Image (cartoon, rainbow over all chains, first blue to last red; front, side, top):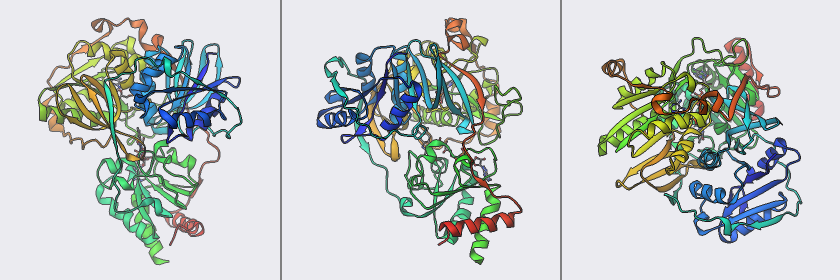
Amino acid sequence: MAQIFAYIPHKDGVADDIAYEIQAAAGKLDSNAQVTAIVTGSGDTLDKVAGHLTSLFKEVIKIGHDDLAYPNAEVVRKALCNVLPSDAIILAPHNTFGMDLVPGLSIKFDSACASDVIDFEGTEGATLKIVRQVLGGIISTHNDLDISNGAVIAIRPGAFAPVEDGSEGGTIVDKSGDAGDISTKRRFLEIVEAEVGDVDITKSDVLVSIGRGIEEEENIGVAQELAEAMGAVVSCSRPIVDAKWLEKSRQVGTSGQTVKPKVYLALGISGSFQHMGGIKGDPFIIAINKNANAPIFQVADVGIIGDILEFMPELTEKIKDL
Amino acid sequence: MEILVCIKRVPDTAENEFELNSAGNDIDRDDLVYSVNEWDNYAVEEAIQIVGEHGGSVTVVSVGDDESEEVLRREMAMGADNGILLSDDAFEDSDSRGIASILKAEVEKGNYDLILTGAQADDGAAEVGGMLAAMLDLPYASLVNQIDIDGDKHIKVGREIEGGNKEMNEIELPCVLSIQTGINEPRYVGIRGIRKVAQIEIPVKGASDLGIDAGSVGKDGAKMKRIDYFVPDLGEGAEMLEGSTDEIIEKLIEKLKSKGGLA
Ligand SMILES: Cc1cc2nc3c(=O)[nH]c(=O)nc-3n(C[C@H](O)[C@H](O)[C@H](O)COP(=O)(O)OP(=O)(O)OC[C@H]3O[C@@H](n4cnc5c(N)ncnc54)[C@H](O)[C@@H]3O)c2cc1C
Ligand SMILES: Nc1ncnc2c1ncn2[C@@H]1O[C@H](COP(=O)(O)O)[C@@H](O)[C@H]1O
């Protein structure tokens, strides 16, 4: 098999936690693999993260350039194209950066592409068997990936159990000189921070969280009454915010808030990985959903198959009567 | 501004309960309700709003079978000016790269300033937009949730990144953008609207019309091939509460009490 490279995102000189998951994924892909980490960036923070990664990887390639100070995927792609062999197997996270980088990179390398991969099930010749999910996680699929000409693979965050920090004592290879022309037609300007809302759902021990199953804006009040009776706060999944029914600050998930409640009541939420990615600290999860196949039932502690519009008012009444 | 929006007809996850077919090699597609991919609907709305303000036209294009005409027409009822269906037996079972190369052939026949896709579709791949951009050698930005048109050379776009923060970029035209949900509020389309566009002709183009070598797309051209579908067995799963509504609520309240769920 061709050499495996792991693209490691980092911030303020610290590698993203996904580094440990990508290392685990690489081991699952090929247990004999020699995995090389790649970090791009500039200045001290790049040196710092490269140094740290030598404990996890035998070899760490660093590419430094002022234009790489912010990880603009268009610039990173050009640098990788100039530095890596085109038959490389490249792993990256399936997050907002990976989605920006991975598809285009696979075209430039004329290699295979697989995104949001949750497992590897071995190789036969130049065919790698991968597992991914479709239709919002309701159903999984096995796929054959032709890696004869390399591959760019995006790993779902949280899908591979992270490895422990190691003591590899790896070496750093500086490839900054090979980066070549990395000018692009997209220029990073600035980060605009998310607005702070009226309630801070991250502070609440109990969340009554509603999803698309709430069906109508008018029904939000019903969830609010339940939350009030429970002494809880209302949070939600993304479609509720997209519809402007609740403020963005109430959204749980990778593109919303990260919450750490004790109890999480998921009402009419299917359980997409982007939603579940915002729930940390292993809370007690109760899911009510009318679809017995909803993926949320695989991660919840307690499940109820039913219509939330019927359950919510009755539950509120019973709690008030206690 | 000439805008092309790529749209896909997908099974509606809100309207269906998916099950495997008896052979286990596909989902049971009988009686499935299909609609336009959620993300694509936001992309079309954005295109219509841009053209409404700055002039130009919106074309919607889909790679699919005859039934994809229905989603093209729906988006035309929203306000897209033209629809194009790319359809050929040779396109079946294409992977993302195949779809992107079919779309590329159509893009090259036009003169577009802006090409929009959805951030992702039913397969959760989030690949076609970025691939299309790379094939066309155009700049790309994914997960766009803000577009400011401030000239005809370049535009300003916001990308939604982790935590709901926004990454602002300046990007040259022409470019390819993948659109994230929430960027706007897609307008409602009624039966009347659909009736209005019922007579407009939607050209259908196949591999030879597009100058595509049939072997480079479809199953033969795919580097990723789906082998089967399965329902994952992820450990024990949830403890399911059963019984009458009253019984279930009683059990639920006990659980809530013991876990600190009731203040
Ligand atoms: C880059 C990116 C970032 C994202 N970030 C986030 C994020 O931060 N947070 C987030 O939530 N999503 C996020 N998403 C979207 C995510 O992929 C899903 O689309 C979303 O989480 C689905 O929300 P849902 O579960 O409410 O809706 P659906 O998936 O539509 O599920 C609705 C559920 O309700 C059930 N239901 C319907 N009616 C009833 C009823 N009356 N009673 C009981 N059950 C009912 C249905 O069976 C279904 O399971 C992101 C997507 C992308 C691409
Ligand atoms: N068959 C298709 N026809 C037209 N556009 C498509 C097709 N498949 C995917 N796309 C576009 O690519 C986007 C991302 O899809 P995907 O990469 O499959 O997740 C979709 O939102 C569409 O805009």
